[in-house]
Image (cartoon, rainbow, N blue to C red; front, side, top):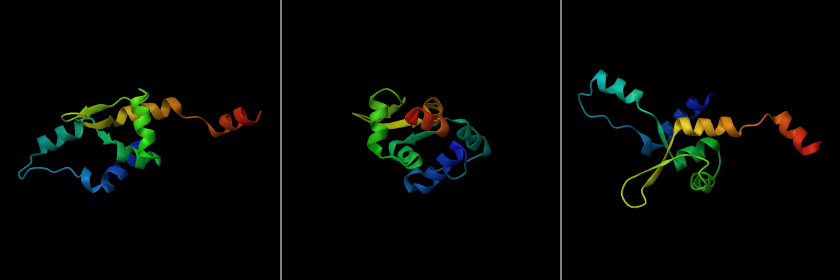
Length: 104
């Protein structure tokens, strides 16, 4: 399963992530919405990666995972889906390579 499919599965499972559309929404608006970048909450990304939220917060505060804050005050953290994919690509290892590094 690709990362995009996995994110979609996790986002779809989260009831708070449902997109509300106004009555009479046109196809043009729907197409424009599809072109917008996808942002994930800390909880959604943690669920997708099967890690705790504190791991995601640590990656964000350490500058390893780019994010934005939305709202007043401290705001809520949002992580661009493309940034999450880039982090995974950058930090992924081949299992055989990892095994060889630890046991050689």
